[in-house]
Image (tube, rainbow, N blue to C red; front, top):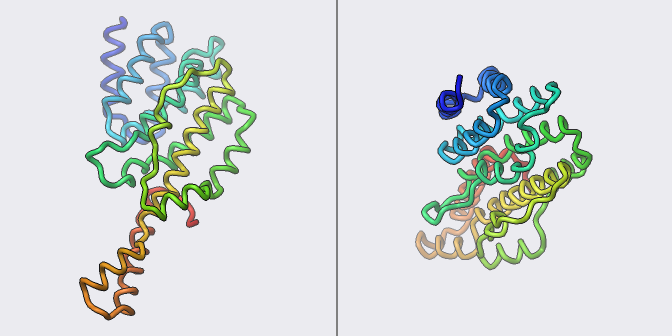
Length: 242
């Protein structure tokens, strides 16, 4: 199989990749078998991430976890350095910024928990020394006082700095540090989104003016709506209540 044929085959496989472990392993075996074409095939992975929807992107990330595991047992350890170097870039594709046309951030954060689990597994396979520290941080409440003040002022989370390109460090540990710092900021954004979704006092006042002075019943209705929003968000994001 020449380079062109390999690219076409891999593109087709990744564009319809399922979340099954078997499918991920099949793709990983193909790349390992054709490791002499790794530069060409690795570029296909990045191109496929750009072209795929969010569901396929997380499946591709799962496949990368399997690929690293397979490559760890190869004497040449192909692909690994390229994947780790681009780990933050890969995460920005799996957890993309919110376009101006999207009003709700929940959909864009649905891959957060799965991305965390996969990054933990990759970090362990690469013997990343800071993994325990980042796991502890991820499980904690990451909101700051400035975040709470911003939410009180009804200002949105500014995610622009997360997607600003920066010079990458050379060591694998430092490259994984960058990936983890990005993931922690997306986790903080998810916490922020939950608080932003709660009805404000102004929402309550508008509802009272609109629906009358039956404040007790209205408050219970708003609380019910708030609970539904939070429950849905928690389910999608798979995070613990604050």
